[in-house]
Amino acid sequence: MRGRSDVLEPAILGLLHESPMHGYELRKRLNLVLGSFRALSYGSLYPCLKSLVDRGWIQGIESLATPHGVASKRARIVYQLTADGKEHLQQVLASSGPAAWEDENFDVRFAFFGQTDAETRLRILEGRRSRLTERLETVRQSFARTRERMDEYTLELQRHGLEQVEREVRWLDGLIDNERGVRRTRPAGTGRPVVADTPVEDDDVAPARTTEKERG
Image 1 (tube, rainbow, N blue to C red):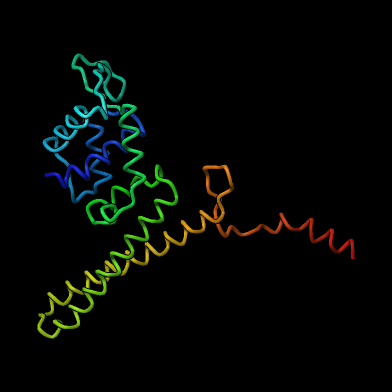
Image 2 (image 1 turned 30 degrees about the horizontal axis):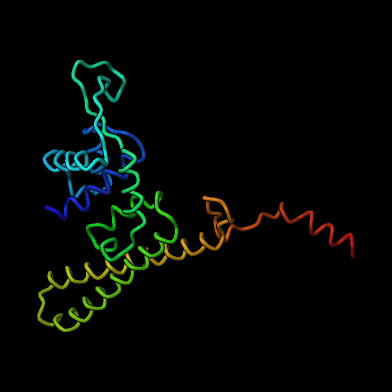
């Protein structure tokens, strides 16, 4: 149960950092963040919301307005981050230890990379790649030892698993290269990265070429 809360809590805090939400909207957004294979029930959501309220990280405010602005006689509870909740979220987003690389947590952390600083993003990506590279080597060794004893379906399943991990490692390699490029090209004192390796348009360099020829 605690493992699910470890995934739910940062996801809720991250979404509420974007905007206040009521329970129904929050559940829909969480299902997108957590993925369709981890469908979230109200039985999981509301105990977690209550726990976050009890700890002072979020607060619920009654609202008579529905999401579409239509008046309603039934009050809805709209949840929003408190100052303590924002501070806690920043601590969570700044963490980059092994827990952030694991299967259960990585997707949620990646979903909020837009709120995470570049150094932490890079550490998480490199940690995830390291973990998957170790796993890939273990699976390859096991596959090589046991493939002769496998039937064709088990063999295909093992091969499918290998291909999935290999694809994710390649995906991570691309993300890591991009993050390193973003860090190299980020102007001092700004929060927005400059796209690395941007091709220069001919129109931008044409006047300089003309001037060089005139000087010659």
